[in-house]
Length: 139
Ligand SMILES: [Zn+2]
Ligand SMILES: [Zn+2]
Figure 1 (spheres, rainbow, N blue to C red):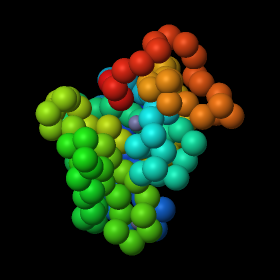
Figure 2 (cartoon, rainbow, N blue to C red):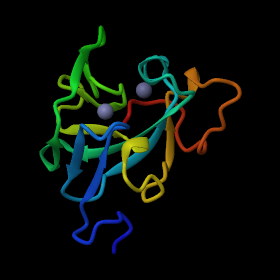
Figure 3 (cartoon, helix red, strand yellow):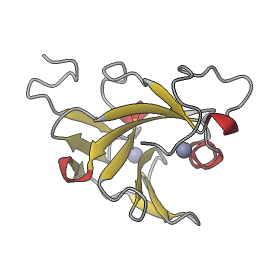
């Protein structure tokens, strides 16, 4: 077994009800904790962990997520049955990245976040991963 929990180095996960399953062919290129307002509203969580995969390495294995197109021109997907937030993709800013919620990975401990993004929007009671960067996108 590798750190990702899959014998072949792939990373897998899925939603709460099990209808939607996803797979990435290899490890994420980054793991971040996002404190932005829109992630908070999209998920209901105080901060959101994201695994960032090359878009070509990411696949939906089963189920069809619903897509919410945000006013910041990003696509956020979620399970239409249970509501689990699944992916974030911004075609304009970062077309090569597919951000996937760390919380939906089968092994959520495999890739802990190594930096915070949008710290300026962080809630006071949320503990940051570190102060490696002060601002940025999910990347
Ligand atoms: Zn579901
Ligand atoms: Zn965010």
